[in-house]
Length: 181
Image (cartoon, rainbow, N blue to C red; front, top):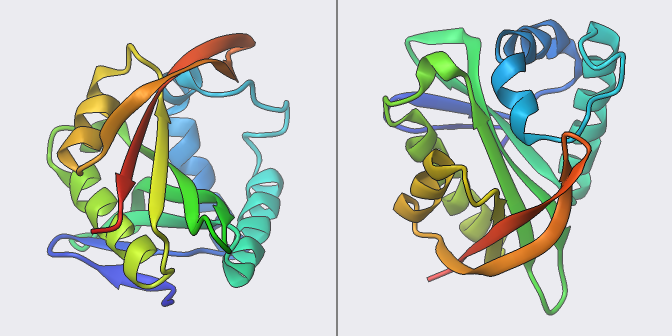
C-alpha cells in the first residue's frame, strides 16, 4: 500500500502528526456542519496537540493496517485539505472487511470530489488492502451522504437501530455495503 494516491483531480494522502495545523484548520472551518452528525468532541479537540496525537495514532493504525485515513487535496491546491475518507475496524481472516466514513469541506460540495475520492479509496481497499466488504453507517436523514454512497456502488441493507451516539443521542443508522466485484 502507498501513502499517496492520485485521481484525475485529487491527491489522497496518509498523514502523520506533522500535518496537525492543516487538519485543525479543516475541522475548525467545518465545525458547525460536522458536529451535527458526529459524536460529542472532547474539550481539546480543536487544538493542534490533539490533532497531532490523533494523526500519529492513525498513522500507526495504517502501518498495522487496522485503519486507514486518506486526507484529500485538489491537485490545483495541494496544500489545502478538502476532505477525508477513512476505513476503520479492518477485520482480517474470514471477514476481510471494514467500515468507512467520509467528510468533506462544505466549500467543496457539489463538485464531485467526494465521489471521486470515495471511488478511489474503495478501489484501494479492495485491491491494495485485499478487503472483500466495506460497510457505511449513515444517518437516515443524511440524504447527501446516502446519494454519495449509492453513486459509489453501496447498497442499502437495512437499519441499525440506535447504533451510534450522535450529539449525545443514540441514533438509527442506515447500513450500506459494497462487495468487492
